[in-house]
Length: 101
Image (cartoon, rainbow, N blue to C red; front, side):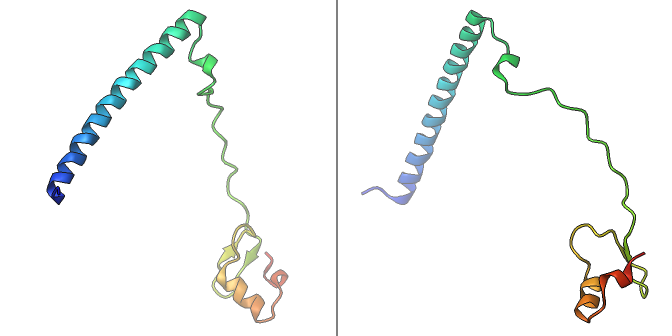
């Protein structure tokens, strides 16, 4: 029966062999692909992989605050998660509109 360290050595050896074989197969496949692309006059663009990047999106800028906490001066635009101060006030029975700017 093999020992733990012997099995680890075998695993390491087999992993190295597998990686070497994988690399050889990759080189073979790339060579075949290049040959076929040349034969049919294809370019990388014909493969449809990377598309030209579109223009960078323009920032929409800051959004005006819709609600203000009159005690602390904190504001909220009305977008995203409701801030704790507003959620607490609503839970206490105040209307959201009473905080409108």
